[in-house]
Each structure stands twice: as C-alpha cells, then as structure tokens.
Image 1: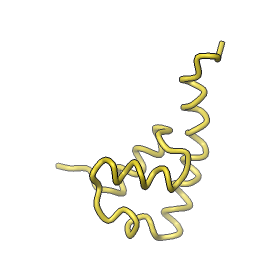
Image 2: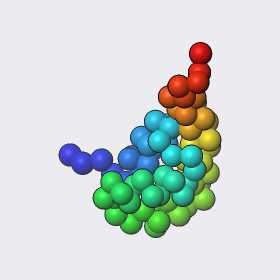
Image 3: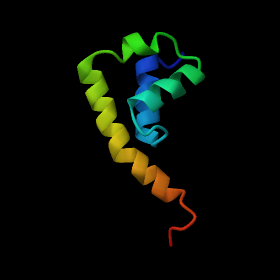
Image 4: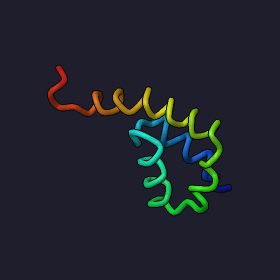
Length: 69
C-alpha cells in the first residue's frame, strides 16, 4: 500500500526535512506526490504542518551542524 500525500506531508514535517509549507510542497512534488496544492490547501492542515515544521526543522538542522559540540 502506498502512502497518501497527506501522510507523506506529515512524515516529512516530523522529520525536519522542510523549513515551512512551501518547502514541504516542493519536497512532496519532487517525491512525485500529486495534487499537493489542493490537498494542503485547508487552513487547518496548513497550520498544523507549519507548526510541526517550525518545531522540527531547527532541531534537525542543529543535529547535523558540524559546529555543534
């Protein structure tokens, strides 16, 4: 069974792979997901994904920062 676009969006957001909704959309489209803009259009979904991206992106970036002690 394949992962839906919404499920994949939440996976990417939780992984810290995107800094914001636009970055998330670009990544989803690059992964071959369809109807990304339409599926992420509802305000509730965008708000939730944006909050997850904001919480996880800096953490993922810090974890891979070679300057981090």
